[in-house]
Amino acid sequence: MVITELKKDDAVPFIHKYHYSKILPRLTKKYLGVVDNGELIGVITLGWGTQPLQTIRKIFSNHELTSDDYFEIGKMCFTPEINQSNYGSRIISLLVKWLKKETDIMFLYTLADGIMGKCGYVYQASNFHYIGNFSTSVYYDRKSGEKIHPRSAKQLCIENAQWEGKKKVFWLTHDFCEHKGIDKINGLMFRYIYPLNKTAKKILKSYPEYMNNKNPKDADLVFQKRISRGKFEEIEKPDFNMDIFTHNFQKW
Image 1 (tube, helix red, strand yellow):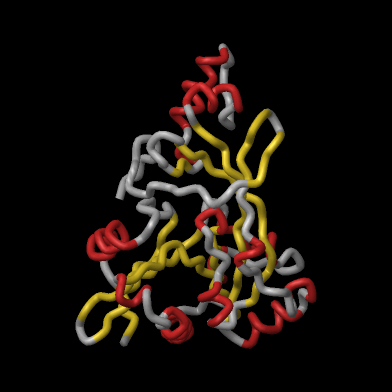
Image 2 (cartoon, helix red, strand yellow):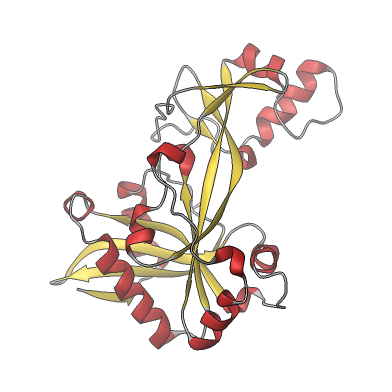
């Protein structure tokens, strides 16, 4: 089993077929293939989220790191046979070795999507450091089951503003969501980081708040539905239909 670089056109169809979310991060730098006996069994994308510099500076506020100092895992998906095995931590180990050999970056950063019921067990098994969580929100179309990311709701925001007679709205209002049959769902994103060299380890150790954190478990997952303006209630994990793209648009 080896890690090898792929062309985007070879990686994207695999992601489209096997990843629960078909939307590709815009700031993707590398497309990596996991190959076993000549067969492509997994794809990992590396790059950054929407605010690369702010992300690393917020984590390490006492150091002037830049986006050149880290990669974030954007997508990681495998064939069903691999998903049902315990190969996850082995593949991440290969990824870490590849990064140490082929790049000069200091950190590998990643998020586990709590709204999708993931708290990051594969990263915990791979000795990543859990460095806390933050709140996140998505919209849920009750009829279709579509998961709508706020960044994909631009057209809905325009419609929302027109419906309420406003010039502009940045978040869908509760009344408009009720009108459209859409729920706003709150949850958590779990943050993990892996130091790739001695300097990175030294930097990480200088932040005691990241040392020996208790790893999150399923009991730490949070699912809340908005029931009125500013009020939410606890719910079970929504049953998202990740094959619907009525509101989410993405250019591959």
